[in-house]
Image 1 (cartoon, one colour):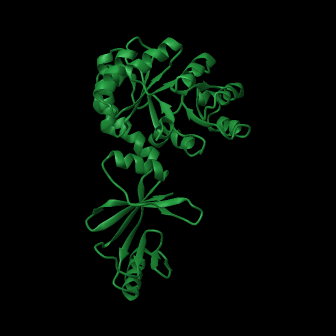
Image 2: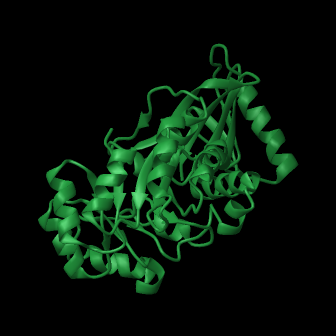
Image 3: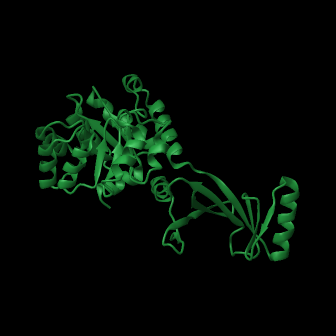
Length: 317
């Protein structure tokens, strides 16, 4: 899996500014505790190289990048310290050319069609859009995608918990970046619990995990239909009968046959199946082979773990 694919699955790239390199490891540990193994440490302070080196040594699982890189010398310093990818605020052909020549993942900042064309000349498939909100937000990205359908985007600048879903809903947006998960006052106060909470809240918002329905396996069709009628009387939901199951509204699926060693299933919907699977794997869960529909699209995937005799599966919204 290449670096861009990993960032896409992570979905969030927190932008970090540290004045004291000693804060970098506890800060990244706080984000890891919140569920996000990603960091972009910016070269906005002289502490950046030391901060990157300390995180790389202490937290090798962190997908660590260097941001606000303005010179080739900074690229060299960032890579030497352990950064796995480089982000620039603008499109600098010299920096991009150096990174491409040396096999360094580079995500340059772009703000206009000319920048996009420059990135395409170097064979890039992902660029940062900065400052995204000032430039027009999602509408701007959709406009760019007309003449440049092959390009993908990582918007930063004005992206926050309130609008990140709007950005990520656009298929050309592979991830979003921002500093709202790591507010400067919390870093200065060494308030790592706040950063953990902010990170966890951002991930939950992005994944949109929520109960879709509960499936119950029954001994036979008659038992399933009786159960469906009872639930319908209680809830007022209509019954939609099918060959294999009777749905009560959209909330209960009464299966008409039993399944060995399982009482039923709990379906949890998500805004992005692949991304949710990746994040849950980071939390220690494992998965069966995905369910693919006739169009070749993955629509659901079962976890190997069970809860009180119930199977669990993720469902694409």
